[in-house]
Image (cartoon, rainbow, N blue to C red; front, side, top):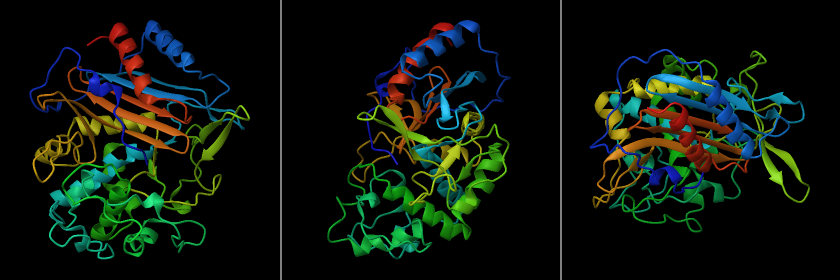
Length: 394
């Protein structure tokens, strides 16, 4: 649910150079109360981005070595109702959902229920045989080396649920539209970011685990991580009802220049009647509190074997051995010598702009969740990182 792009942070090296990937495994310390100077500096930074108490806004989380030093929301989650954004407001994570999907696949791999070298057709026989000598493997989906066409481009997709389409509606479409949407390149030969990969991964999880993808992620990731209010929007029935008002859900907003106003463009049913409820490439809704728990889980290597985490958070390679700046469901940020200095993911979808990033040299994590399509999270992260460096340091 986002296009590939080159984040500004890929150019940031700081002073530290990592000779390989390291992950903190010690217990996380208690959170710190942010200094008045830090709060004032971030308030000023957000205001410079045009975010006010009357517009769609942003929620920001920062953790420095083991301690959360900042969690705050700015602007409105719902402009019409003037509902403010807080650290408990839920956002559509867009492509920040992909690491959750990848983790689900790797959980099944660690349990011996699949391998990354499994041909995708072993689990999704609906997928056509594009090249019998070079079948698409699960690892190709995880690292975007499949060459599959983008499912967003398909037309005439059936809606077996009646009013909206789901993953299963798309599985047969790859064969149906193969002539107009062929495989773009031989699997494993190059990187090209494609949302179809993670649609298929979520479907594989559902078939191998023999339960809905939303339930698997809830039971195996959200609950163990302590992510109490996150959910996968798989259907209208999967949206939690009766939650405390403070766990409000944001609408995504797009700016209409001609009318000089913000227009809602995405939300959860029943307030927003979604027509596409595909998951895997997106579909996770979460907030700052739960993303802090997710950050803790990744830092402490929860869910997966240590060697599996190392593989997920290391650069992948093509069949010919070319290094990629993507791991297994994660964007990987590395120096010219291949040493990794950070990992994370960005997301863009229907007014939502999201970002999760961890820099290994400073051991600093940052989460940015926004419901306005004009916010460039990479530029905000760069400015935010400079502010935190000045007022908190290492």
